[in-house]
Length: 148
Image (cartoon, rainbow, N blue to C red; front, top):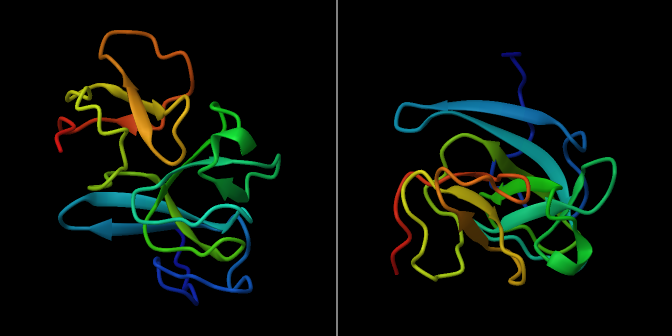
């Protein structure tokens, strides 16, 4: 890991970019281990909340959206860790354990299932059952069952 001092908190919500767009940040938690974050811009139609499932909207992989019409299901970005206002800048989590990921509330996600972007609902994940090949890129893996 590189020793870098960042100007902003992981929960930043900046009206102008305070970090280099696309910057990668690693942090260690004694509870959750290593987690990785990326500094991005929220699309003009996206307000990010903690746990919002996001995809990239651009080839530079620096603008994210929860709007399925604006993205490609295979351009998975990560999940929100704090509130980012539409068109503002902030950090999203791209690797590591996240305790809150928005789901479609179908209660069909089991431990070990692949989490994929929901096919028709913005900002949430659906699943592909463990042992089944996912049809789109995998956002992560379920460590707990989806219950209301």
